[in-house]
Length: 116
Length: 142
Image (tube, rainbow over all chains, first blue to last red; front, side, top):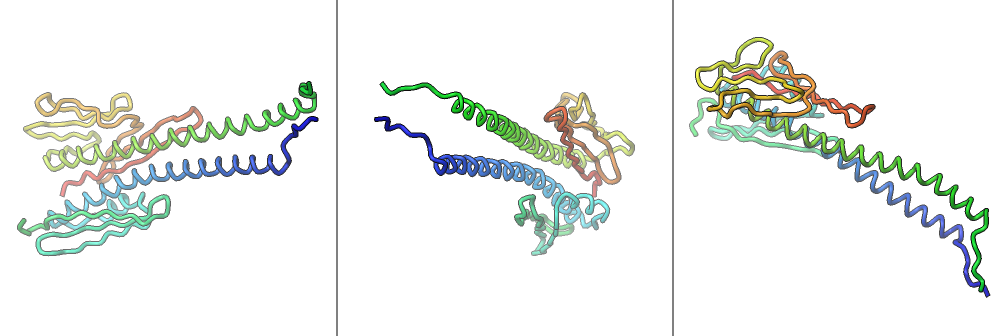
């Protein structure tokens, strides 16, 4: 008696579905990895913007809007908030990263004329 | 003994399935490799941006920024100049002042623009896939 049989269509379809789902998962993970690496560049650009504002706050000078616009360009929905407390100012920058997450970075500096 | 070989139809089916799957697997692997290269490239640009921002901030604070197209800090102690040499951004200074140092690779262009300096990082991950990332760093010394 020959007890061997081939695969049924259902078994083949399940196998192909598992393969497809695995490939899709790997593809999505790769895309997210690429987006997070772009987010790493954005974080450095955010730091550049914060450093620029921090120097202006420390020296008591107003920012130049054209320059601020240029620095904010790679940071979608960039919003800078300044909080003064005693002799220091805390600058908080918020923006949206390529994955749609709300990001923020903060920097505290001594203000112009303030005593450390 | 009930063993038998494959029929021609069975072999044809296996070869057909392999012919369909192999290009799919190959293109998927190619796509993954491109993603990996792009991720590495982005991280290199992020790293270079951080280094350059730090270096330029220190030079700006030390003063002596010369007007003009070149990025030069002319001062009595430790003058420095930023130059593009074979797609590598180099900070040139005396040996007593840290000497010449390469700050960033794959820099396609580097020029002073209004209020800062603009760098374009360029890298051909494949001949038909060239990536450009533009970074702007402020130069105005408050």
